Length: 330
Image (cartoon, rainbow, N blue to C red):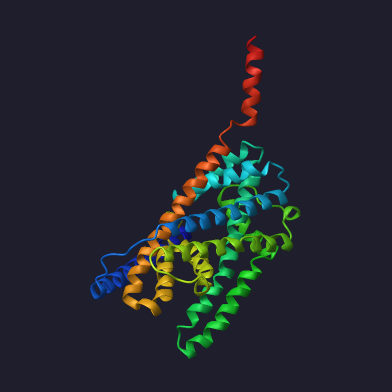
């Protein structure tokens, strides 16, 4: 069996298992609580949307910085517009649409397809490493609910995971994976002399850390839509959001749908259980997960439309060709 088929079936099994577990938990909570009405304070939705916008813009600037390190000198604002516009493409399975949309829009302002492809692959790889490191905050919080014997085992596993993720920043290991992806996209590999140094890779990982903080603020605001919760009690939401993005890769659906939402549901349930009890907290967390997804889509649409407007002008080469056309006809 081909490697791609094995990964497909593993993801399918994970998705079905998660869906079954979530459905059972929500049904069990519903039968016990019968919570039929939840008032939603929509004003907090603006905070959640703003958090998602800040997270996406931060990612865009890191992507732009990576491209600049590779020698690209295209104007920054239009490239950020190309980035936010292309993010809408992630809802088409495979993320190929996202890459093609980014190449087309960024190419209008001078970025070549090779640089766009490589910087996008680097962005995704460093984003995942950064998210894995940030997710350790949530693991620390989750460890508080474990029995003492299991809690002792959690720390060695966490430290080992951090060490593994950190080694991913080593250029030889990092570019080995990147070159494998480039071969998959039928693009030329990155030669040794063009590798970014470990300092640039580490800065890229650190540059993504605000993304998780803004995502955690969005999650906190989504919770406040249905139940008051202090920001201090939600300090670990940044890690929970990061883990939801990383583990969401196990989903076959665009945007990590299903798996990502289930993990956020679990995190919010843990946060609300002391105040509401496990059953009411589970149902409330289900509403929060839906609101979180709604606010994210709204943010992506808003920035996507703004990016479309910023990058709407024609390709520079096309403009020159159009200008020469009247001269040749005369």
